[in-house]
Image (cartoon, rainbow, N blue to C red; front, side, top):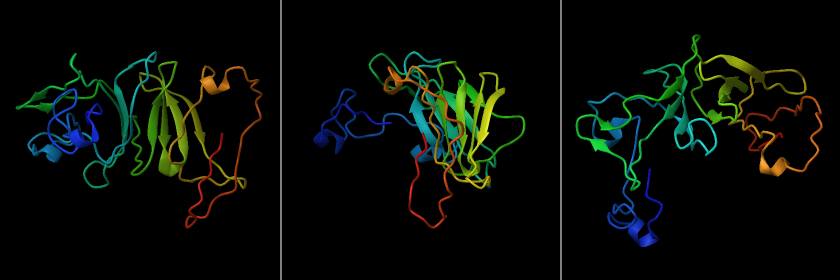
Length: 207
């Protein structure tokens, strides 16, 4: 994490900005090897889609991330919620003995049956307090409650009914989304698009 209050000149050095560290990294979590602490446990592996949980939602101000895993060291995926415990001045505590906190995620989705999405994928906190998870390699989206129960699930299929298509990330636009206010929402059934060949550079967006 960087201090975004710096000027371009300050960001090129080690001083300046609100926290006085210029362009230096002010917080990192999950792979202590990255800051010379290989003696501490690694907790993130190839993670994707770290995002601040917006205000008004459960866990607001925390970081939510999809922890992909590693085929050799950790062949399963989880979703983690981190409380970075930022100080009033915007700084993050570093303990010489334990590194950057927290010691463990505040919340973690770790299903009873292991799933492994080695690439892409993501997670989104919803207004209900549930979390929308994208298993990107499988083209599978599912919603889980805080206690890990799946309450909604969908797997992408093409117009021929085939499954197994890569999806970078799914985002749910809920009824209160500003772009939908004042519009008449009429259910249209499932949307399906023709499959894009693997060698194609085309990107398809489905709303």
